[in-house]
Length: 223
Image (cartoon, rainbow, N blue to C red):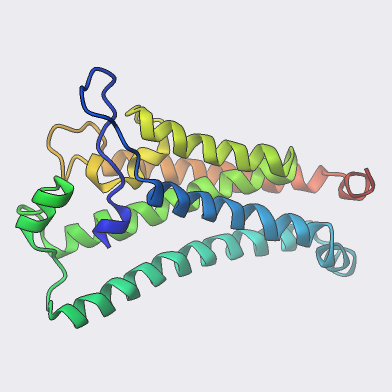
C-alpha cells in the first residue's frame, strides 16, 4: 500500500539528476477526478431531474450525491487495502508495518518510530480525508460552474503538488514520501492536512447546498 501511495520526493529545481514524476500516482487521482466528474453531472441532467421533480427537495439530491462521493472514495481505498492484504498473505507477511529496511531503501521513508495505529492513521485516514475534501470541492465547482472547470481544478491541484511543496496544495498530503512522519526534513504535517480537509469539506457541503438550491438546472440543461 505504501508503494501505491508513496507519491514522489520533493522537486528541487537546482538538482542535477532528472526529476521523474510518479505517473502511476498521478493517474490514480486523475481517474478519481474523472469518476467524480462523470456520474453526478449525468445524473443531474438525466434521471436525477425526475427525482428532483418527484421529491421536490433539492437537498435530497445534493445529500445523496455527497454520500455517493464519500462512499466511492471509501471503496477506492478499501480496494487498495484488500490488494495489499492479499499480497501480504501471499508473501508470508504477518504484520501491518512494512519492513523498515525496504521502505528506507526503495521509498526513502523512515517507519522505525511508528506504531501500528500511527501507520494506519497516516496511510489510510489522512489520504481518505484529503481525497474526500478535494472530491467534494470538485463536485461543487462542476455543478455550480462547469464540469470541465471542476475537473481541471482537481487535476491542476495534483499536478502543481508534484512540483511544489506548498502546504496549501492538498496533493502534498497524499504523498507519503513528503509526510513529516516518514521524512523528518519535510514541512508537510498530517494534522494540518486533516484540519484543512475538514474545513474544505464543511465549506463544500454548505456552499454546494446553498448554491444548488438556486441553480437553474432546467435552463442549463437546455443550453
